[in-house]
Length: 174
Length: 360
Figure 1: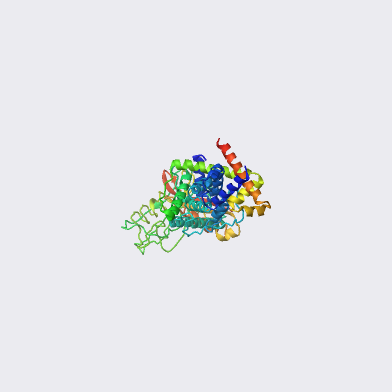
Figure 2: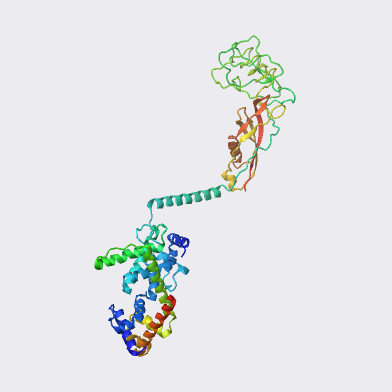
């Protein structure tokens, strides 16, 4: 998003909280990707991401535009929350978000978005297996029962789906 | 692809999803690319998380006012709850925007003032729908007993004056009647109470002009009521003039000028006398009675506009009733005029003033 457009959007959201939906849509993937790289457990990453947006919504009125992208402010909140978790776990210090960090995070966010899109394009049975396996943490046996297939068939669908995703991600990056 | 790889990959996925590191062996190396994909998938946000997070943001108890985003709601978000809850005015919740007490007070005050202004103006409009227009219409001929006709081309006036060298100015009183000739001048203080030949005091002037009479003789224009005085003039009579009349003139008449009759006093327009012009003429009010009856019409007033531009001796020459005559007199009494002029001097001029009462 162009800086001017983003600034207009933020200022609009400060005046009209309804516009926060657009801010959320524009920044969700990058915030989640940033958190997921530091909190490698999905449930925890989701909790932190939710907290980031809760704090952003509450503090949006106090946000002042100083030339840096709005995502830097969001990732600043995320960094603080992640560090708080680390501190509780191992006493790590909070790390400020710099420009390199922003660029790397952008790549991760794009890659995650790409994976989400590619899953949607998988054949129906492969997509169902991937969603059940990786998003709902179902076992092969449970999926086999849900789909009325053998466990071996489910394993085979899982193998093919991962292969398809690998090939398609590889093609996009070549 | 073979069954071994499929089985091995599944074992690694199981370990990954359980938060364990897959065993590092030759098989793992062969499957590493697929494992990388699986690792990324294991960290992807669940599709429903994105929507449910927005749902939580929008429907949290203190933030539900923000949930009516309508078309702005992120795609995939549930369209369940749309209740709009206004954020509490005095709360200090972190989810509401900060509120300053001074701003609230100023805002409240402005709203109250605006409401009062609207209410007051509405009441005023309802009560004063009858707006009144008034005009000085024209100066019309006046049949007035105290005004001598002015002959165009000649100096107006006549008049007279007198006195007996008293140290005090003449005292107030009425003038004697007019007669064709004068045997005895009027006196406020009779020095000789037993004259050899008593005669009625008179002024020289048109006998058909009847002046108001009383037991107390004096100068009608004088301000002093007591003690009685014939004034500082000479030659008999009352006033500062001379010649047996009343006033400051010379001769047996009354008022300014000389030779008898009535001098000075009130003029009419014409014959070298210019008309007064109103310079401040506030509109009269409608009487409540006439307003309710939607009564309209014209009141004709007569007034003397003095040399100071103030109206006096206001009377309703043509009455309208319903309290409008008095309203017209009250209003015109506040008017101010550029006085009528005679010989480049301001003089008292009798005028008629037409006051129109219209409802519209």
